[in-house]
Length: 201
Image (spheres, rainbow, N blue to C red):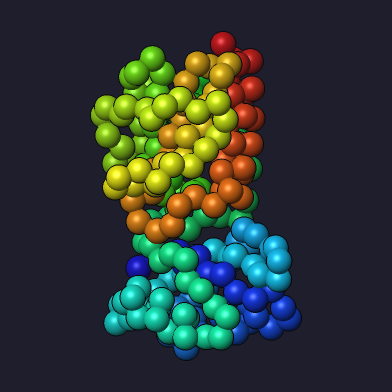
């Protein structure tokens, strides 16, 4: 099983190593670490780990939270392990076939963002949808910029594409609200894809 863990820890030498050691003691194999934030003496990191069957997510949260100064902000299942440069891989696919840019983007975003599904919505209709996405989706109040919404059952990232007249929506059912670093990264990717797709039209 693959899991993502979002951990807030003291930003000091050895802090990350202590968390890695605790994960290793639980039998987890760390596949990727992403630093989301380093502010006011604390760091927020996302760990993607291969998880052994006998240990539950709740046990992992409890064990890590017992470490001094460590807070577990979320533990959720993920299906894909991003490659060494997933953003570049996506953009290369879009550059090779820019007319399919938004469809390619929507297919790739769930894996890139540790989410369940993604859609592109225009004029009240779903134009592109990833696997597991709903066939219909009503946008919340249209945002003027990229925002994160903690909806009733899912956390949503809403990314407007003004030039194309649509919104890209990414949904996470489990785990924490999208971090601002995740929103900024996704917004940059959407912007590049939008420019590439515009050149093909």
